[in-house]
Amino acid sequence: MYKIKGIATITGITLFLILNFFPMAWAQEFSDLEPAEGSGFYYTIQKGDTLWDLSQRFYDSQWDWPGLWEMNKEIKNPHWIYPGKKIKVFLKSQLPPKPPVAPVAEPIKTKPPKIIPSFTYTQMSHIGFIKRDVEPSLGNIIREKDGNLMMSANDIIYINPTGIGGLIPGKMYQIFDTQKIKETLNGQKFTGIKHLIKAEIKILEHKGDYATAIIVNSYRDANVGDRIMNYYERDTVLSVQENPNPIDASLVCSEEDTVMINDYQIAFINKGRQDNVQPGQIYTILQENKSAFDGSDSNWTQKSKIIPPLDPLNSGKLIVLHAEDIAATVMILSSKCDLHPGDMVN
Image 1 (spheres, rainbow, N blue to C red):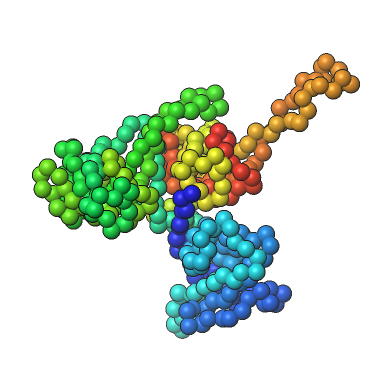
Image 2: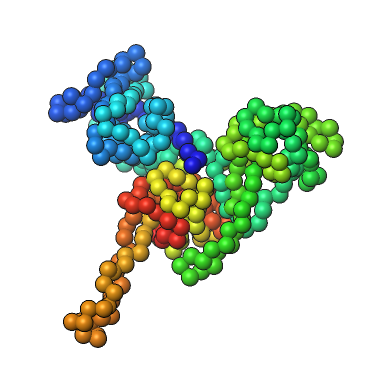
């Protein structure tokens, strides 16, 4: 399974305050203060802890969990952290001391500025997306220099240009592949083209009939026939909107087509820009709440055998990372159970 790695910026003011006002009851959980690295400590993971909860506890913001993950590179999968293991928590204050000022008159009371939480994800440039049509291809891979069938970082590849756009030496491009999506979600047909980004390349030479390039960053093995497109760059910092207008959407699939979708995985929903879906919006994931009664109890009257519909179950949260016209790319922030394609998003 492809692992998503995110990196978040951690603000220092709240962290400094937390360090100076920790309750004594928590003291036994922390050790090995590291002032040389900025105010910080080691925390021992307890049963039931998640990076999401620890980020809220230490940084007063659940959105900073990717930064906590980055600080602890030994955590391979952010969904799995184990009791008894120690993780690093750095708390840094970046505010300089205030200089003394002369007494002044009664200050004019002003409203404090509204603080908009942000979510930072530096891997944004290579997440997949779903569009109505295929992204134009600038060329196709015809072979790897040494004849390797599967290509990864530092491999030299040969590209056959399509003539649609130039492959400029020194410029970055991306290798991608596509998959047609055709699903019926909550009674509505949905079709689109899923684009999966495999690697980033830099063009070395363009010799007219072909171009050579080096694979700079690899996320999945590239193969002969894979296509080339312009570098798909997106903003890595999103302004979080926790209460957008409701949408009647569904999970389409995960980026890697897994049957079950869990925390921190990349997935897609069947609503996009044309439905006012925008990056940074937070939505709730709902699942059908089925009754266990099948109507076979003979003691029930015919009228009482009509099973009333139950409210759907609140099963998790997701954040929109990128939006195309007909669909959006999302990250699962939290899940109370396994999620599946077809689950409702509102």
